[in-house]
Image (cartoon, rainbow, N blue to C red; front, side, top):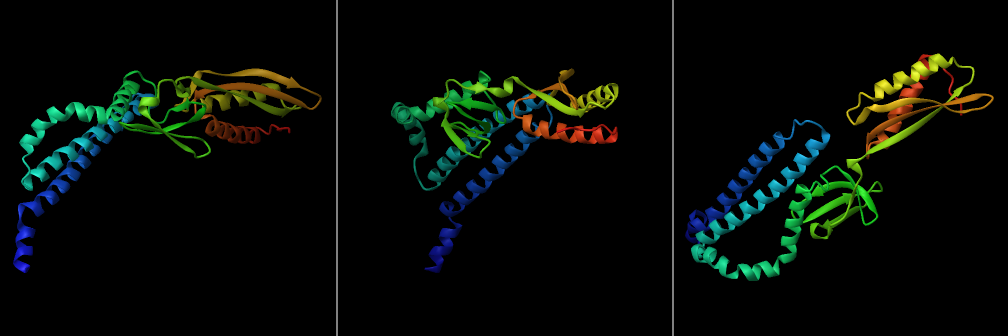
Length: 259
């Protein structure tokens, strides 16, 4: 019995699957490392996101290719006539195509989504009144995560119309209630400094961000208004940073904020 076990452990049937799995994992990891490394630099965030989405698709193709080739090698080791099997694929191709036509539609539409620039991973989109960020884009499905944490998985074949909010800019209008006793020139200078600091963020449109002047006035308060134009999806993060900078700069210049 022990001799049979040893013979089996040394046989092609036992060794081949192990080698195929190990080699397949190594090849995939090398491909993943090379492709991810190619995405460390880019012209801008949109360019990087688009390239990252293409990388995800390529890794999916590589993964399935490795699996198919690995299965053929393993079947060959077990004595299956893979030559006839591969040749037979042409005969049953129509049958397989009919059986998996929905999956093929997913793959084809996934490619169209990339080519037509519908969206990329990281974009904020609206699909059937569901608003969220694209967190995953594969050969078959797209996953969208809402601000509340809900994840919607959509078959690529069902995506024909979406609204991509990341392909247009958001505009934040910020009002700062300030004591009427404050020096208007100093307030204006301080607000322009805040705008200059925020405009250095790579997702802010510096040329379209500006101080707009006085919005409201009463006996104790003047509300100064400015606008910041930024990438969709960054509004909450940016508003928090702006509030922090307002407090820091107002305190530094002894300007009184009002309720």
